Length: 343
Image (cartoon, rainbow, N blue to C red; front, side):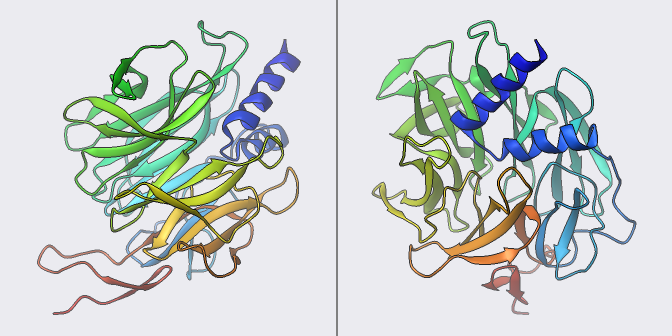
């Protein structure tokens, strides 16, 4: 029975991806996560590139020195809040989603079934989403499924499963037991979101509306969408090969006309890319087969050459300095760098 479960999880990795292999490897190697709190001096107040240090499992900052944040399997942050996903020890697999403020004071904790997979925070920091892998659903006992939740910090309301949202495919209301969502990404209005939905063996990019509680597909073969800071483009991984070892390539989609272009990164990226600024994307790639990942960066316009950004890292997110209510946002001058706002 145990070997069958492992095979199911590996099947989920091939079909959905999300760097699940490393999470499974870490659980087997360490016997579970080492849950470590953030150092008192480690906060989100310093601008820079925050990420998960794979050697320690803790959140770190570049520039900034040693990892001082909490231990996380997946990490993301925006504005005044951070989201940390932890794989809890034991079986069945469970994930703890922890919400922090800028000083890494725990604000809320939610435990859900499955293995940590995706984590995102809206630009305002008020709406958060996470995805986990699960197995053994009644509609498909021999297949994986996902669990995607959304938490609104303004109201405290938790949507336990986005699968309940009414879905429209090709202009027609769609009902199916095998609908799975993952990779939710929020627009600046805290209402509109983008995500991947899988059903009938196909993946779709969906645009969702939280207030209207509806979602509609925009196009096929889009996984792990990531909305650009200016809200005009979506980075995603597209399935371009039947080879299960290297099926995807990173692309960018223009939302105005749905035109897409591939990026200069030709290796198969099994991650939800993060925008470091309006011109640069960061993503994790395995350092060696089955081992921990490094973070790479590449231009979003398809030009240039990928470059190694952070060795032994994952979950990158670029954060500006804290914004005072009476000042405009800081201006980005490069990946993880900002110019001070005008006075």
